[in-house]
Amino acid sequence: MLTNCNIFFEKFTFRTPYKVTIKGRAAHYGSDYEFKLEYTGTEVNQIIGFIPQDVLRLLKEDLNETVGYGPFQEHNKKIARKLEVFNYSLNGEKAFRNKD
Image 1 (tube, one colour):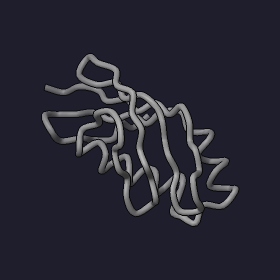
Image 2: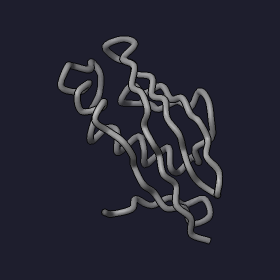
Image 3: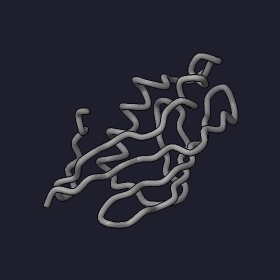
Image 4: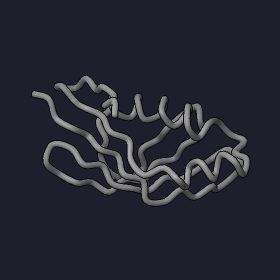
């Protein structure tokens, strides 16, 4: 069964030059979950909430492409704060990017 998984970004907090905390909501399987992630560029760790593992893998890749890796500079922070949503599709446990 194919379903959408939308990752809505609400707040990026740059804790150190190498670590950012991301808060937001993940909507999938008919539910809406708050999440909190720690992102370094090389890792994305789910602290609170539920995002399917395969979506986390794609999310990390998309954050790598848009926000980049630490040490985070001012241009990385500006890009991150403009992000609103990433859209994915789930087919069972396999995730795919939605092309807009």
